[in-house]
Amino acid sequence: MQEVRVRFAPSPTGPLHIGGVRTALYNYLFARKNGGKMILRIEDTDQTRFVPGAEQYIVESLDWCGIKFDESDYVGGSFGPYKQSNRKHLYKQYSDELLEKGHAYIAFDTPEELEKYRKEAEANKQTFIYNCQSRNNLRNSLTMSKQEVEMLIANGTPYTVRFMIPENREIVMHDLIRGEVHVQSNTLDDKVLFKSDGMPTYHLANIVDDHLMKISHVIRGEEWLPSMALHVMLYEAFGWEAPQFAHLPLLLKPDGNGKLSKRDGDRLGFPVFPLFWTDPKTGETASGYKQSGYYPEAFINMLALLGWNPGTEQEIFNMEELTEAFSLDRCSKSGAKFNVEKTKWFNHEWLMRKPEVEVGHDYQQWLKDEKNIDTNLDFAIKVAGLVKDRVNFVKEIWEQSFFFFEAPTSYDEVTVKKRWKENSAQTMRDVAEVIRNIEDFNLANIDATLNNWIEVNGLGMGLVMNSLRLMLVGAGKGPHIGEIIEMLGKEEVLRRIESGIKALG
Image (cartoon, rainbow, N blue to C red):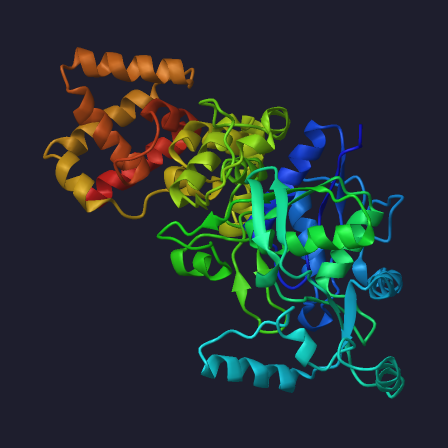
């Protein structure tokens, strides 16, 4: 049985979109499920669109996501180098092979000439395609003598090598997700494979590298489906066995139809990249899931279910569970609509599953970085544990717990109007005395002592506890009041009651 070998082959032309991350994830899950290999190949043949720092961004993003590679320029492997710019010496021989076999030809048409043909076609309400219907009337080796072609090349005339799409042929292909795909060859153009600057185009380099690296399955986005016929015919022209193809559904905008774009995140207020990105050319920035407070497990869990379903009601998966459940036959053919609120829900679920020491450590670091507050880890763990069920992100713990670190300097007007009565000040003085006299200051004693005092004095539990919460928090929010009292400590509680009485009278 052929070894499963898949690849993720991004171009370093900018930050890695979450659609690209999902493609990498599905390749990774497929390889792991089938005991295969996962390869990272950088496709940087288009030097005009190269963006400095983009390759490193891609590598760091995939590492944060937990997507590991068996072969790459970073971890090694027997089929390297894994960057196309370091493989460019390989491609000309394959371009020459296609020329010799009559599957390709040399074209000398200039960009200006091609643009002229396009405009003439538009004027006649037609579309210009460089293919079997036009190539015999254009400046190429099909219409020139061998001597003329050789002379132009010797004189340094720029040229391209184009693949010769066969005429009047129905191309029948199989896609692992979409089933049988039919394409009429006359609708395709003769794609450029090689340029006179010595660089191949994506189409040639992609096919050659997949063959040389023994790729068994090409799992990629739906946007590459129109190229499938060309790639299948290239394999046929070389006499090579083609890999199996699977084209994944698009990620769609949350507010309508159409592919989720890099601009949609900025417009709608959510990240579309895994990590924060600064464009080195323009200085423009884009938010990332990591810096927005998402756990990588939640991000991956969310992405996995956009275009694939496990066939069960289960929604929360770790990477091992995803690997066990994943199969291409449960991938959807139709696009998956991105859901911002569902994405937050995934992070909440993972936050709840995290060990309290990890969440506490994250919150301790957030307090130091964002609020310049140094607190010990045990206290941060206890605080996070009390309120994490109310938040989606670690950074939101502050809104639910700020009063553990800052005494109130103002009091919520709505709560004061509703909870602070004429006799509340005296009641709080009495409560302060009760708290002062609690010797073993733990949650059980605090609750028992306060509850007993309220009952003996015939007071309303809500009346007392809501006023006390106002003194300690400054608002009508927070976890169980006894837990707040225990964690603040007796002296701080008494100080806050005194200050609250003075402020509210």
